[in-house]
Amino acid sequence: MVSEFPVALKPLLILDFGGSGSHLIARLVRSLKVYCEILPYHANPQDIAAKKPAGFIFAGNPHTESKGSLHRCHEGIFALGLPILSIGQTMHDEENLPKDRCLDFQILHSSEVAQKIHSFLFDICGCCANWQMEEYLEYSLAKIREQVGHKQVLLGLSGGLDSSVVCSLLYRAVGEQLTAVFVDHGLLRKNERAEVEAAFRPQLQEKLIVIDASSRFLARLAKISEPEQKRKIIGAEFIDVFGETARSLGQLDFLAQGTIYPDIVESKSADGKVIKSHHNVGGLPEDLPFCGLVEPLRHLFKDEVRELGRILGLPKSILTRQPFPGPGLAVRVIGEVTEEKLAILREADFVVREEVERANFTQTASQYFAVLTGLRSVGIQDDLRTYDYTIAVRAVSTEDFMSAKWLRLPHETLDTISQRIISETPHVSRVVYDITSKPPATIEWE
Image (tube, rainbow, N blue to C red; front, side, top):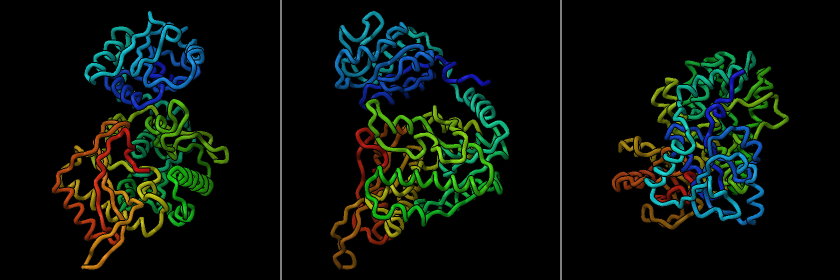
């Protein structure tokens, strides 16, 4: 039996007390080649002990629990006798954390945080810098083969980085036992279906199945405006499509997904509140004909997925492919999704991507796209009054997609984007640029 790779690494566990700092700390720890996981502060102490951690970082702001309830929650953690580093606002007093094992550290400048965490990991916890993608690849291949055996796997292939890496990984692990299904849900970017087929048909041949389900997705989304409801409808419809596909293809035992660690972290915060739902998080519905999920990327951040893809030998066109949310353009159309709105957004989004690439900003810009806002505004076109849509342009730079900085595109590029969208896209009278970082905003608008 293949050992549980992360447990074998004696992980550093980050207990999340809320706020936005936990994922930043996790990325710093991972960058030092130490494996870590983020858990809610109220995680079961027995489950924590089973991971055989090297130490703990308490991160974030205190919740409203009483001192007694916090103490009871952490008794099992204190009993392990492991080092604890507290980062954020003061999170303990004489009653809560044992002072002999806990270092309290207010967040100051990033360089000071990095130095303190480095010392805590290696000097106090005795961690080893043994988190390597080459080893994770070998572990993943062995784990997939052990889980799948001689059975069949169905993968939902979107053509994005995550699902492409999963596809390559699965194909290397189990070969023709893999069937990949690409669903055209009618919420794709311009030319995307053709690009995906061109990229994967040569390798997968008849094992790549393309399904046009656009009409059923749009019918389900009719008159739905609330973002979380849209995401859940799309996620449920995906499950239905895959279930129907599996039954039509015969025996397909496992469902593979490109779930990555930020999907899991964002889907539930420390206090149980959802930041935003991800269609590939939440387990396997009982009514599907699969005996389990294959999620080989669920421990990885986005930059780690890209590194794994590089090791797998994926082409640069895939490794640098623009990230695209599972719900597609539905979460870039604010409000109700209609065929008319999607057509407008596709053209505007194509202009944004083309001009950012033409300006040679693809190495700096991690994600760039257009959003069809729910706003209409007065304009003038051909000396006539118009009352049309407002397009928002979004471009960010990030390493892990858990935090991001808005990108300072040249004014000339923004000017060209604006002029082209107005002149080439019908029913658009205004273009604005989003200058909000993450946090406080998410990268997507919905």
